[in-house]
Image (cartoon, rainbow, N blue to C red):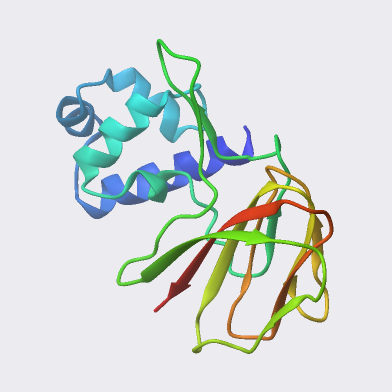
Length: 183
């Protein structure tokens, strides 16, 4: 079993049982084969985005619930290394979940354009704030002020925004997408 397969299996079974649905009833509601649901609950199979979306809809949970790791410490995902990658059928399309939005969370999304020079040092935001950064171009030092990470294009990093943190461009033309999430 893969880590993703394990997460899908455990979450699918937990959410199905929470709603007191049989495997057959979940399969019927989602419009997928009963064998597919059974296989996924046992950690097997290679589900498409469409299959997982149908199951999430039938369970009345966000898609991300089925594949999210729920990690709250700094999380670094290098370009090409996302573990929650789910392919679509009929298209060259791969959905890589970087972070799921918890219930009752506020998210602000920023496009950053940063040039080398002084690092942007941010004071802690409100308690429980988490920042998510995907480097789009250039190179940067990002994250906790006492232990930033060097990011390259396509790298993803999440880190506590309620502690001092920095963003420093290491090359001209550095840009990033930053999402600030607070509870």
